[in-house]
Amino acid sequence: MKVLIVSQYFWPESFRINDVATGLVSKGHEVSVLTGKPNYPKGRFYSGFGLFKKSKDNYEGVNIIRVPILPRGEKGIFKLALNYISYAFSASFLSPFLCNKDYDCILVYQMSPVTQAIPAIVIKKIFKIPVFFWVQDLWPESLSAVGAVKNKSLLSLIKKLVGWLYRSSNKILIQSESFRQHALQHGVDEKDIYYYPNSAEELYRPVTRNDDSDIAKMMPKGFVVMFAGNIGVAQDMESILKAAEITRSNKQIQWVIVGDGRQLSWLKSEIQSRELSNSVHCLGRHPIEKMPEFFSFADVMLVSLTKDPIFASTIPAKIQSYMACGKPIIASLDGVGADVVESAQAGLVSGAEQPGKLADAVLKMESFQKVELEEMGVNALNYYNKNFERNMLLKKLEDMMHALVNRGEK
Image 1 (cartoon, rainbow, N blue to C red):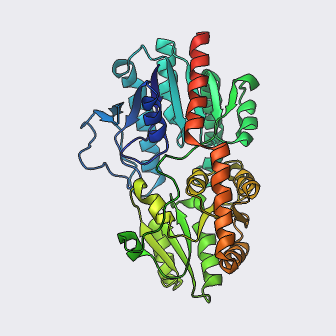
Image 2: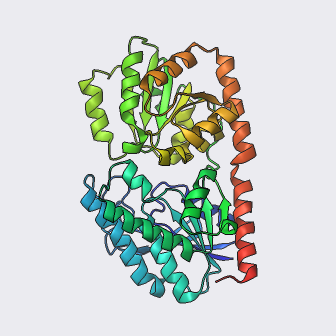
Image 3: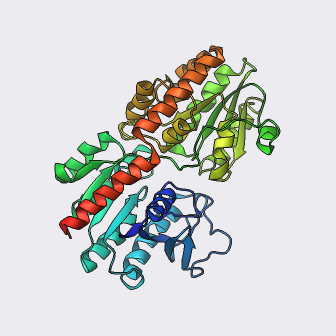
């Protein structure tokens, strides 16, 4: 098949859609990606890229079509909004000229913003190509949850846009079963909604720690609680810091944060002002290929989200990454993500925005015997292989695409 992926984010930006694209190529499909110029998360163009530079590229057999966008900047809603709008406008206007009309289907990878799906619907309308809309983030609810948009009229307008995008697509893929009701409320037919969770790249696998490595030199001594990924408002860094204040007297417990995001500067400042430098360590952003090695130094991995019904309905993608590496998990969140950890018997759940319970969970994990932690890690890996394994899910996606294309839906 010839598949067009529409995603504002793509390699060299580190997102799971990169692996889906290369996975489809490895299965013999011809894959193109309509994306923007890479600028996430720093908010400025990557070296070698510019507004009108490097419009075509190739990544492991994936044909990349890049359209001009305004970089998101480091701070501020205004620049971020311009970034979102610029991709939607640029890709919608240019895609009929840049994209091949012979694609068999289109896959939209819909993280924030939902506006990145607009070009896919434009292409569908012009060339009559069916669209799979893979929902990763619920709009406008997530905007309201993080306080990014408070104007009710604007939220209502975005809600109408979401409904139009969903209904204009042929199939809606949901990364969490709890997204189903959301899609139904927007007028999507039940038969057109499919549960399709995230997996993890093949590079995520259990790794034996190497105490002579460069990564080992970055690690504090003690019981390591590691958070890895985006550092933003939704990830509830405040509760992590409060929990670290509670566990401060236990010198063994060390909190390690690997990643980057719009709240990183705030986080570093708070670590200093709260005098947590001896127990909370920011190691910055590192290549995705290094993540399993980082995880190997963690006694337990941490996933956290703020308390909101929208976040309770999602499965944070880092859960799959942690599980694929066979690591025990503390889930400082509510809802579906917490249910996955509990069902897998892969760790402990402390609930969202409950720093006291998070601290208790860390202290309890620190008291466990090594064999108990290892058993949780084995449970995590087994659950991953049964429910989220990469090749199994790629086969499922292939089957859905073939079925839709063979039916000739437009």
